[in-house]
Length: 281
Image 1: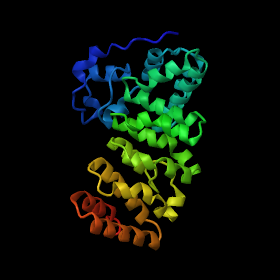
Image 2 (image 1 turned 135 degrees about the horizontal axis):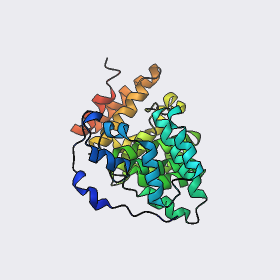
Image 3 (image 1 turned 120 degrees about the horizontal axis):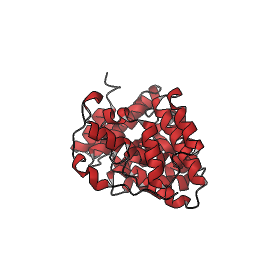
C-alpha cells in the first residue's frame, strides 16, 4: 500500500491557535484535523478529545499501511477495555507489527517518526521499546524524539527507554554522559528526566533511590544550566532523591549547599531551592 500525501497547507491557519480550556470548546475544524492526523495537539484537552481509532486509521494510511488490516481493526475494537495511555501502546504495537511485514519497513518507520501528528510521533517513539535493540542502539534511536519540538513526544521518549536503562543502569549513566553537554536543552533535559529516581507514571529506579550519588556525573554539569526546562528537571531529580531515607536527604542538602557555594548564580540557586522543597517542609 502506498503512503498517502498529507496536505499540511490545508491546516496552516490552525497551527498558531491557543488550545481550548474545555474539550467542549474545541472547534470542530480543529478536532477534525487532529483526528485526521493533520495537526499537532497544543494542550491536554485536545489530546484527551482525540478519537483514537479514526486517528490510527488516518496515520496508517499516511505511512503506507493498510488501515483496514485485521491486526489494526482488532486492536481498535478492543481499545475501550484499556486505560487511556495503554491504548496508545496497543496502537503502537499494531502499527509496529504491520510495518514488520511491509517491504519498505524503514520508509514506513521514517514516515511515522516525522508525521505531522505529535501522537503519531509518540507511537514511533514507542517502537524503540518494541525493537529489542541493545541499550546503545535504543538511545541512538530515541534521540530524535528526545529533541522533538512537541513536549508530549519528549515525555514518551524517555519513558520508551526507561526499563532498558533500569536493566543496565551503569552502562546507561556512562552512555548519557555526553548528552548533558549537548547544545540542545531538550537533550540535556532528557538525560536528567530519564534517570529520575522516582519519576512520573513510570517504574522507579531503586538503585538511584538508594544511592542517588551514582548519577552525580550527569547532574553536576547541569547545576547552572541556562534552560529553565533543564533546571526544573534537575531540581525534580534531587527532590525525588530527598524523599528516601535520612542519608539521601542529607546528601541532597549537602549537595545543594556545595553547588550554591561553588556556583552562586540565579540558575543554581533556583535549582537548589526547588530541590529542597520537600526537605524544607
